[in-house]
Length: 54
Image (cartoon, rainbow, N blue to C red; front, side, top):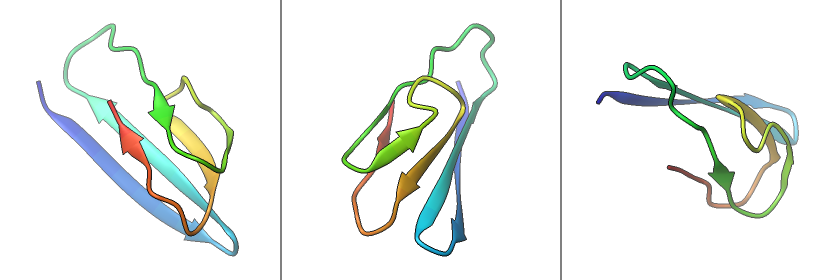
């Protein structure tokens, strides 16, 4: 499985983008400050935190 994570900074938030070469993958972002998209391929979070994608 290949997993890619991209970060895009916009003012005081960051867009967390994940992808997988395997179909049917469930996305689950963890970490403080996530404001939307917790169980999607792309989440939006407040800056200045540590985020993990599993």
